[in-house]
Length: 410
Image (cartoon, rainbow, N blue to C red):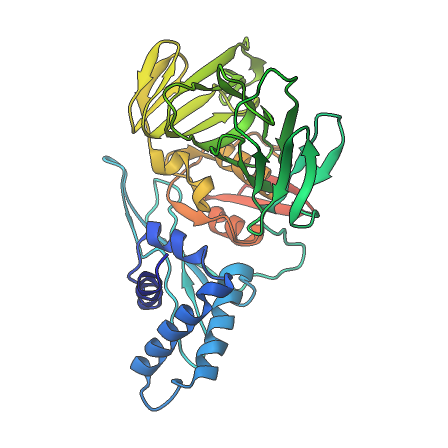
């Protein structure tokens, strides 16, 4: 992001006029040293505009920046506010600003949007949340299993070369991404070694495949791939959820293999027959969700085209249960953009996302309450703040360690 654009987004953020998309881009720059001067300059201008006779000194701007970091990333002394407006007939949701920081005596408050029970219209005040018995959000962590079965815990590994597989070097970059570097991208008849990257609950990670294609892994997911692709094709296998940006090469097909079905949401005890699905790609951006406990696999296309079972997807479409449907792309890739999107999600679906990201066990002693949600909230929040917002829909959450018990409010 260029300096001028970053400063503009910071100013929009401080003024409370930033869009959700721009807010997602902005908070990802927050702790990068290269962006600090732009943040400070924009904050100093905002402070000066608010009070020309004070708060314009550089040290005050730096103090404000540190406070903003605490508010966004730790949420320990902030007030989190959510607003939603629902039209139950047309299901129209009007969101408040994605986030707003009000600078007053170098303090900040954040406005985060989400909507709740579709039969209610209200605003939610979540006061300062105690960190006692709270659960931190997920983070960048994964395990890399090499061809000989040995494993590397990537979040603990030093940057630089972490392994060598034949003539291919495995390198962990400064940004935490794993990359494969070989003399060439196509094998010359040698035995091809395979690696597997897997994320636990509460983890996510990024990978650059030997051909330069990029992969983002969501929590509780895995991808198996060769350390060098053959002349004939580029093929990987996944479970869980992954987002792909495939390097275009019409002469070199890219294929993703996964299971097509798992447990259905509305039939928790019924396991459908499972078969393999192959996604054929040239060069494109798409998301694949194939959790074994989360219903049929879903492939969502952002750009380019993919072919599944001789059917061609176009951007904005998804393949699920053997057919092509329109889909909410923003919701499908929300996890990759750092947010939960609960639009038209029931409580069971919401809690599955939270369970994976916060590494939870969810208990429904009285059955699953029939509640429906909507809107978005950041994946960087601590668990208590998310649950406090959800409680407004008429359910109560009891948190004991990583065990969440869900009860209907009486």
